[in-house]
Picture 1: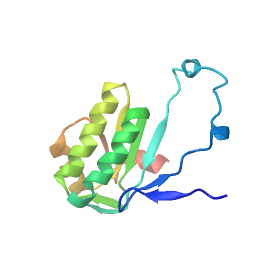
Picture 2 (picture 1 turned 90 degrees about the vertical axis):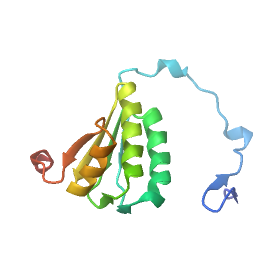
Picture 3 (picture 1 turned 180 degrees about the horizontal axis):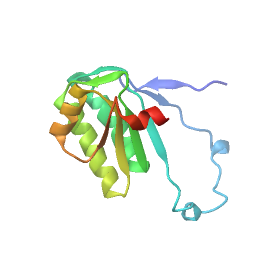
Picture 4 (picture 1 turned 180 degrees about the vertical axis):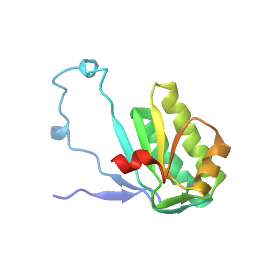
Length: 136
């Protein structure tokens, strides 16, 4: 039997409830997880990120900044064109920094750098011509 999806809106499907048999108890408590473990997430948007895309970018960054240690935003094939996009990235960087993490923007072109710099200084920016990227 396949998973049944219901539309809660024009964009986001919702999964049907998971059968009770699939709900398993933890074999060890969540607190037993190593506290020195890091979770790193990389986002690679494509295209021009303008004001119409800011909400989706913010949603992804909010979710990741709540649980990741480091978020890498690779802007190699994306360009930031909205002050709102810069603010969404700055807010996520602020949240990560407050928890001891970091948001790193790599492959940042001049226009995207201007957008990010205008929003604040909490995200680490690495230009698209950085020698660090050539080492990878």
